[in-house]
Image (cartoon, rainbow, N blue to C red; front, side, top):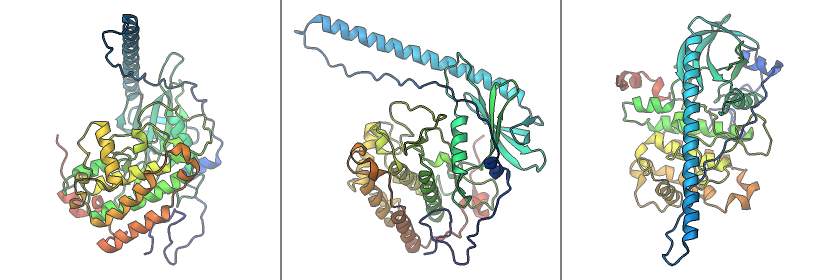
Length: 434
């Protein structure tokens, strides 16, 4: 089968494709040739939450001193947890107040000058604890972009800056040709406000997240088979490139995939780099410090995350599989409504080892059994610490071959538009509840 998408080392090219690389003069490429000064990263570390130890009941004949020591230690631990919660709440309130000031300051029509270009603020898209996202346009071309604003922590503030790390990742991705990084947003510009209170990053404007499209689907919180397969194919290519660049995402889910802004855009984008880490050993000063415990979203996170061990590309592929299954039919994730982490972990192990008692293929085509088996063979191996060199290498071609087989047997096509780009879907789309 001919692969319609370009950008993967293992992806075949369509006949007659012009492989000559053109020089791009778009702002996202100009930025790679410009000298841009970045702020020094805040030298702060995340303090991991203290785990509560297992306290067994002491027999009555044991000394009371041990019991008093244990009780005192438990009280101290509980006190520390309360202190941390108060500190976190204080920082959250500080962030909310800062965002209110931010929203009040960045009004439609305001001109923001970054390192290279000037942008006009159009409207607010959303806000979080310590930052906001706006739709803006470049003052000359009127091209629309997304502008992220993040509060810069002061000497007494105890929260992390995320934008410098996201900028670093996007700049690293932009070292590659556009055909490879097509499923990721481009960094357009960056800067800080004149009072040095907020950091600014301008990037490609993306469309709705796939979780929003899925919820609005007239098919009932799911996509058609062709669209789910096409999303899986594109995001696999995106992951292959992302891993080639030296990163693992660690939080893949429908919430972190998005469509393009235009209906003619037949690409799916991967975003949200909050849990991204470099697995190759290269040190980035802007990288967010590692925290202890599980990472990601319970429904989609890898078994490595369940066990709180270091994650590698193979773990992204595992999350990619769960996401693909959920896009096809949420009922195929039998642990979808479970909130007990150990039970979810056991169900995932059962799925990957073909020991799941419930027949998921009443919701999923039988052809997906080969894909599940392949991921299981890759994941259910010796601990990472015993074979670190092997887990960093994935034979992506074997996954493409399975996806090609699914495409052939089920009659899918890369030329069919995504559900959300069809008039039938938009006409029958469920309207959000007011």
